[in-house]
Amino acid sequence: MTCKEAQGLIMPYINDKLDVDQLEEFLTHIEQCSDCKEELEVYFTLLTGMKQLDEDKNLSGNLHVDFEKSLHKSEERIRKTRLNYVRKRMIYVMICFAFCILVNTNQGISMDKEPVEETIEESSYYNKYYYYMDRPTVLKQELQKHYDSILEFIAKQQANEMKEIVYPGKHGE
Image 1: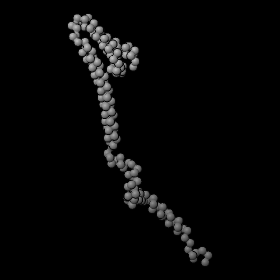
Image 2: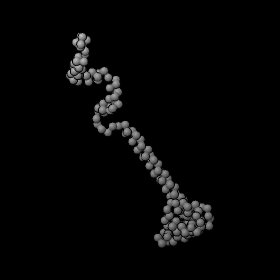
Image 3: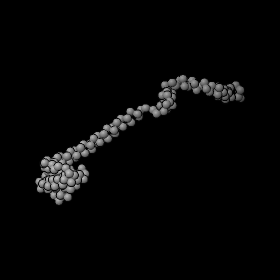
Image 4: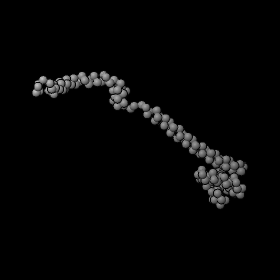
């Protein structure tokens, strides 16, 4: 910040109209530039004295101390604003972290109210696994379901085989 820019911010500083970024830059310049600091103190003393007279207050005995307090108050304002910014970010990060944990812990919980056994029996893995593990029983159950049709089929096959059997003595002996 140049001295000319700093001098343009003296009145907004005294009237407490600077935002935190402007205030920080202004105070940094004031600490480094003794001419601007002296000019700020002159304006501060003059305007504060006039304000106290207008409000019928007793003039402060030491306006230099009031000026230093004003600088310190402005620095505190910057620190508090920065600290609040960091706190808000930390809270935001903690909320995001808690939300992620909550989502991850709820992934394994089923939202439907069906018993676990029914959902397992419906899965293809479960059916394939138990089909191969219990294959003789499954085969026996299927045979019992279709017992009559199997017997009919066997009877037809045997009848067809009997027709096809050629007896050696009957054909042109």
